[in-house]
Amino acid sequence: RFAYKKGFSFLSFIKNHNMYTLPLLFLGLFSWVTNYIDRFIIEKYMGYEELGIYNANYGLGSKFFLILNPIFLILLTPKVYNESSLLNKKNAIINGSKYYSYLGFFLLILVFLFDNFFGSLFLSESYSSGFYLIPWVALCYFIVTLIYLYEVLFYSNLNTRPILHGIIISSLSNVLCNFLFIPIFGLIGAVFSLFVSSLFRFWFIFIKFEKYENSNNRSN
Image (cartoon, rainbow, N blue to C red; front, side, top):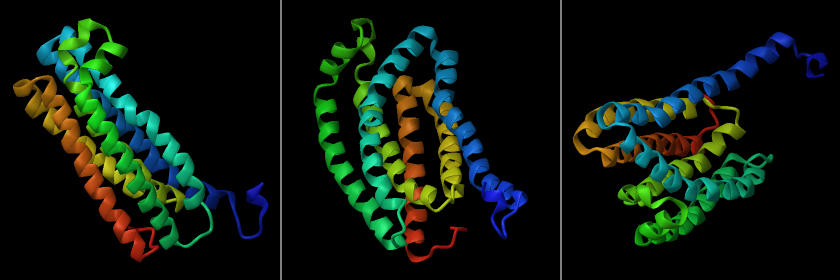
């Protein structure tokens, strides 16, 4: 129905739609690479048994913050998608990220102290040789999910390009690190690769977020 509004054409709708969605399409592609390249390399260098151990413990380690993060996103979204100023939106994200970090640090301490307990509770003992991976994967996903909170600002301003650039940086660094570290360090090398790529992505998004405070220019 918007196509019939005065001064609005179907072509302009397609153009604006593509400006928003095309970066998300490529984002999905690079996210897939980041999420699965470690599996392919582990299978190649270490075999299916180690891959199964990695997948099980990786899955459990990721769940802690994948479950927690949507709660904060639900609370944060109305504050960022309203008509308030850019400064107010940014302050809401900073405050939300602060409380998320407090709770995240507490949760990480528990996971590091009781990794064997969580592993035994949710996984089979046949995966126990990889229980040490659980807290380190949780740490990586704390960083990744913290990034999601900052990215809300770009989604709310219909500017998904910085998010795409961040995931490209993360994906390329993740691929490189996995090829370098898995053959040498094994499964912990895969987790370290995820940690490094997550830090790169956080660094990039945080810089873009800070620049967005001073200017509402969508080219940032």
